[in-house]
Image (tube, rainbow, N blue to C red; front, side, top):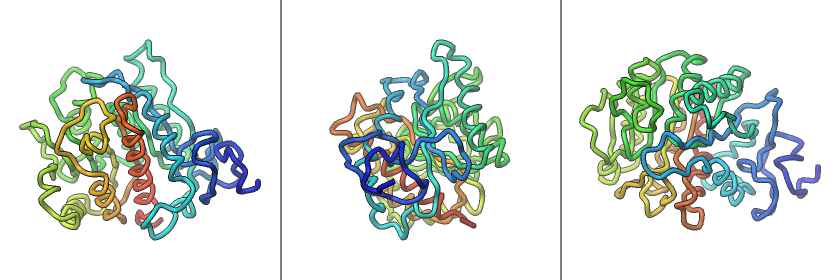
Length: 316
């Protein structure tokens, strides 16, 4: 294929490399990666999980995966600025489309998401999931813990702890890390939550660097503390876009003022290269509330930082 031909999401010969395509046209896969059904040779599979029925405020994140893919096209023509290498030169990354579930059977949705993730990662690729509301991380964690062993360490960026008490197995985007900790999927003592700025007195033992402390400290200090907590353990990275301040990410269901800038978040992720990432997601992009796609654009950039982290993991 001529590298200047369009629709690389359909016609790309190789799963590696970055090639130019008009940013305003063509099939919008994530970062112009090829859509595939055969996972042979794939290092990282990108999938959408378009669920928003677990949200407690404004719905709309079911449209997040499509919007993140669209926004990613503006940055898909070259290596991301400041990275030591192009992640797509090192990783074979493909888009595998969205998780399918029957919205009319909400009780079956968690199992459908877990089965979708398991089908992918059990064939070898790592998974980068695009939400969807934050509940989707719970079934994704179950799939990853089954493959990599429990408990995992959680690197969690958010305005909210999402550890509110839940003893009724709710499908709720504010309680899933209570369940994940209680189920033994994650170890709070070796996990870090960054950017929090809403009250929840019961931390469940999670380590927390809240948003005011991120603002008061240097990026290097945040990175050093996070590295110490995570150590050399297997890490699942989850990023709720409302970790960012509404001034830079208005397109989300539960915005909270006083959040991180995109620069702070990207710099923290960039600084953590070398941690043992096994899975990743970015969630809660609700494009109906966005302005000029800035929330979706931030999410696409953050997803690329996660791919860079994965490319820099030990033994990669």
